[in-house]
Length: 297
Image (cartoon, rainbow, N blue to C red; front, side, top):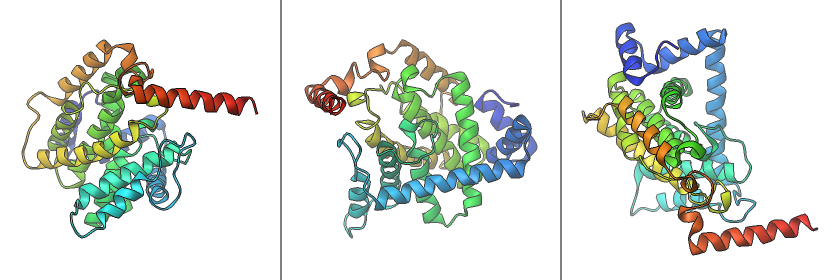
């Protein structure tokens, strides 16, 4: 890739008069040795999987094997259909993000964006906005390339793994990717998209990874729902002219610093946070008994 940081990415786009999505498509083709058409077709298929996961989460039984989660996306979607109050596009994004995350928890097919634990945010934002604005799948595919470029920079300068840097690395990265890509999809330039990333990441700094029972369910799924709404807000702020006073590349470095200093118990070990509350411990105990019972039968 010809860029290692977001400021370099924005500069290249300005110099070549291309979008982030267009630049990333070209760079990906060069790196893989495949044609741009082949790379685009692959990404288009990924988007199809995302949309299918949204549909499955809204129409099928997504109760997880643990029995802890499932069907919340359908509850939110039903609430959104009520005349008053109406959450609008934010409500749809929230429901769709929950839907994909619940499909993941119930062993369905999803696309990791950038991880399975944060798989609902980009689909939630993208599908809800596509429905609202009437965008084509091809346009959304360029949006995925834009999100991929942002994720590439974050992954190579910080981390996207909860085990390494807490939930700020998983959900936070996904929020930044969705926000930057959405800013571009809605007509913003690369500089505005980069500001959207910084605004989104700053709102996620310090978020710990504390999965109850070690499962990607509680609180992971609801964090995807909230994350989709945050991405919408960050994109709107950037398009309105709000700037990330701390440059986005510096925010990424802060995420690295915060994650590196985060206690191990707050990095996907289920050794702290919500996982170690009285209720969290009780859930872990019950899950342990269920597993032992299953092993003995």
